Length: 91
Image 1 (cartoon, rainbow, N blue to C red):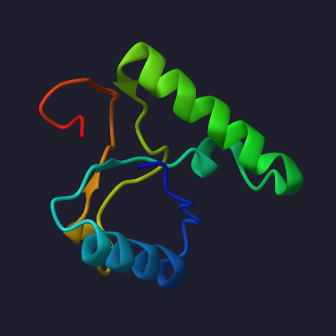
Image 2: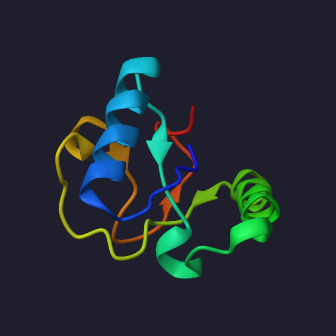
């Protein structure tokens, strides 16, 4: 799952709670916003390209600057620290 990942406690908590509720078995979650910032109108195209590259290479990039779970983010499988290769977490 390529999350919006704003990096704010309120928004990240809401997004994590929704993902945990809608996808209880939970896919691995990453977000590129920590690296790219808010690219406004280009965000959709960039996120689509990154998602295609993730699937093509079988490697999920880590969520940049994610240091510790906040409220509700501990309920989802955030890819942090280093990339994760395709495997049991690939759903």
